[in-house]
Image (cartoon, rainbow, N blue to C red; front, side):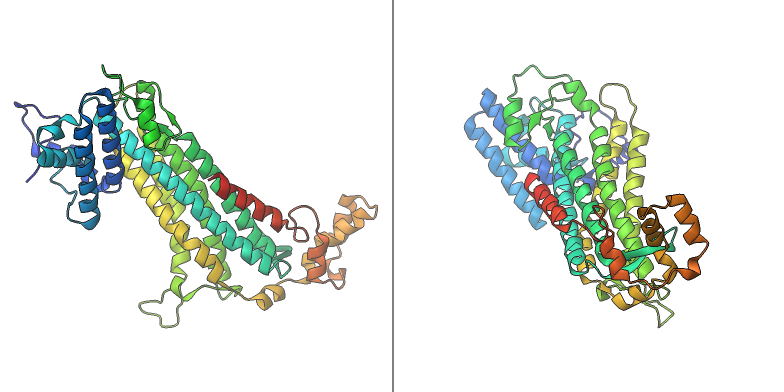
Length: 434
């Protein structure tokens, strides 16, 4: 049986079709936010007790009932489904059923607006923390492979054309730094949104001296959003920034997945992907398809699509507008897709097999041209003259050794000076700051 919406009055006529449209996917989406909403409700009840609006005993009763709801939800006994307009309705209905009149009092001094803002902020903080930790795991995995193959040669490409001798160490170190940079951005974004909106109600404050700063501390926020109109105006903006940071990590995933899928083709043969990362064809018995890498390539587009949805919602005047309900699905879809992908990256990096002999064999003599031109210029020739001289005599470059080429390129970060220890220290520093 469907519950009565929280906003209904005794003479309210409810159009079932309109209700279905307005509720949308809220009940389903709120399953991802339900535990955060329960925690926000518990802290709000504690604040009401601080004010004397309810007794300490009442607050303990509410806390115990919310703990029971949390356990029942986790066990699948309580199901958040289409009976409820949203998670907020489900919580208040449960409390009222368990506690009678006391359950009806829990909404004093708050709105569904600051409820969802609080739950979403808590979710985003966790999503950003998890994604930064996973990025650092991926960075560690890439750094380990860079250390193991620091001077193992492979071709370096520009425009997908053979360019200069490179190394597996340089290739993998690029991902160690890329994922660590992503982690730094995710950590900074988490700090940026680490502000509590609980107690801002519908955006105009309430005639109660709610202990807002105490509530922020109880929920683990670093600071409190002060102005209630501003708090409402952050809806969508915080989600868009969260997705923007996560998109950067998804972009690193896409580049890695592209490299692995490309280098695992027969034409390259540099990499064999783990058995768990490939599938077969339904018709061609010989196929070994890099499906995991290909699907990982698509994750950035899912996050980017979610960002585009949010950008189309923003630009509203001050105050809450129901359009913003649509931001919830975009955020949860984008974050969920990226987190699922990031969980797979460390093992994909660690378990892929590198065929070092194939990589070395793909380095042809003309790829030493840049080394020769730089060497001539270092000996006193104008670089442009050396460039032309070498370019006109590619067949006369002589014999060269890949390892020597790598070790002589000692500019910071180059194959001869990868600075892997410095990268490792940066990763560990980010773990500490997170």
